[in-house]
Length: 137
Image (cartoon, rainbow, N blue to C red):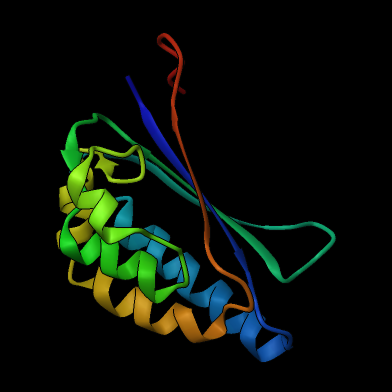
């Protein structure tokens, strides 16, 4: 079953910020799509509000808990996480793809988070999905 993560980002104002985000997301897409277990890594910009961005990440399989660096990235970009609860139970937020191991291990991962965090006006919004049936493109 394909596992999909959808991230919504909302940038701070300014054309310079918009260009920095565009450039970094395009770079991230070309880097991350090569990771083992990654099917697709798409980036999009809203057609009306240029401050809204979406990342759609598609991975092959599911099963491993988030690594410490994955949780740190989520905290860095402003996602609220109850760490004690994450450690105590297997929350869907902490359920990560086996394929995410390669994604998080990628050296680009740490620099991506620290670069993006100051450019965002709102907390990162993350949704996780399991694709139904054999719905592969």
